[in-house]
Length: 419
Image (cartoon, rainbow, N blue to C red; front, side, top):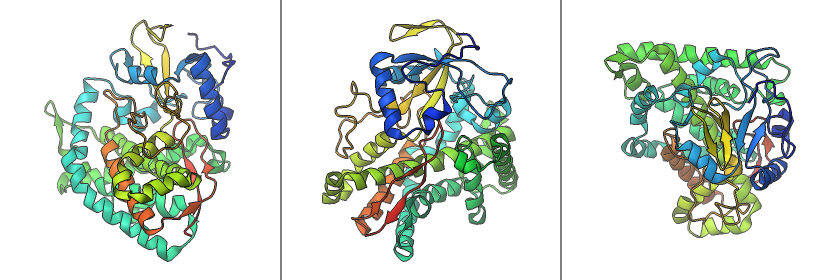
């Protein structure tokens, strides 16, 4: 596949910035056409803002839109590696090194570093975190009662993950809102409203610098005075007798600041909008809130598909669903399409909080890069919606104001009425 290919796919050109700015319903219709007519589709060089025209571009790619193909590639890290980039569009290597951590690593380094990080997400650790998560959820809802109507994203959705993740990293409370603000920039460089005329490369550069400097300062403190947070574990951990480099720790700090905050936040917003639009599903949840949130949360994640794309690179000649794939070809996993695949889900366009089974792709398709934070995200969603619907069972929201981008299915704001 040559890097000069600029021919748009005739069914759906998902490389265009315009595609990702289109209404969600239009994108879902395009994904459906691709699943039916061209499930392993050749797509042109992605449009992007992070690499200037004339910069080094990696060329076109294959887009996977069916559930089983996405799942199969996710579980075959030997044939489809992550170390050559995981973003749909191109970005400077400095950005990739500073922001992606284990997302863009392959074994054996990936397994070793992930193994260290995984200690912060074991079932035992998540269980210990659960009490704090539930306490934070109660606080958010208590304060919501005092505040009244407003923006669901600002008053509810963004607050719980911010509290949880910043506490895990040992960030002082006074610095949390500032660092979350900069983590937002890491997934918002395609959004014209967010940029407000600013240069996207400058915005991302400032965010990376701020997050790295914060991590470096905290890591230096932890070297002299260890605490029980995840950052202390990483600072003092060793792989084959060697400590992690400060740059590696800072890259993970950025990754967790972004992924840990944004995915749960946007899932909460999309889920609340779906509950408001589907009174039968709200009623079903309210009949047995504690009992039905288990399956409900899985549907929240499927419905939201908070992470929309990840890229892999073929390490050898192979094929996907009969389509030859050459060594070096890029392959992009399109999760929202897989989560609406009629071949994998009965009536996939229906929001169904009792859906079972629900083997969605919201945390990835399994394999070496399956989301480490999935158990913690589920705890957060159960705690938040348990408190929220328990206290305000008829809470209503308006239309989501979407964040434009091809990575995170973001919601900038969501008007809320407590009722």
